[in-house]
Length: 254
Image 1 (cartoon, rainbow, N blue to C red):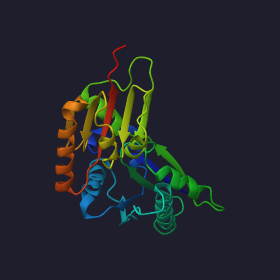
Image 2 (cartoon, helix red, strand yellow):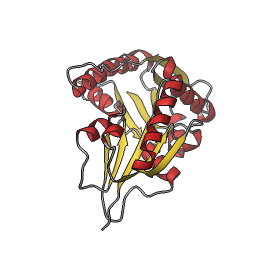
Image 3 (spheres, one colour):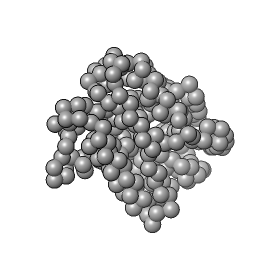
Image 4 (cartoon, rainbow, N blue to C red):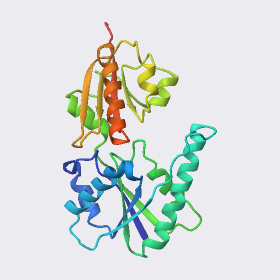
């Protein structure tokens, strides 16, 4: 039976790799990478750096294939994501069939933690549930951008005895909950930041966390939002992509 490992590798800095992740990487025969093109070549390079630093065996194979692109003009967001996941599933199915021999172990290096807004687990679950699965898989947790954000800003995620909402910029733009003190926002194309203007909130923002390009900004929303948006737009134009996250804390008087 073939085996796959979904390994969380943190947000980019090699020092964020856990001992469990290093052990898992060293049990693998091949690493599978879905390359996202020249603009996001940094993400592939950092994965290579991690393998070169922590893989003990020089025989570890590296298999890189182009990643499918989500159709942003699909009839609905979820329809676009479903089609995107289906395309990824076909790629992984082909890789497992052609690049992984019986008894071998393949590794997929997932950014941050694989459980948080990452499609890999769902895709492998779908493949493993097929009529004649060729493999088993395991998941190795990683340090998430949410954890790094809180650490960099030296804050706790939650207020005392209260919950934390983890959501996306798209969902935040639909509705800003008024019954939650703390909201962590991921995958914001900009709509979430636009929607919160004028709200009585504190913001803790970070981009490219864990990398040499890391940027941090925080303060009362009304004081720093415009600056965050300017910096965000400038860095995205410069690099061609941005990976950011922010925490919103409601300013309550009671």
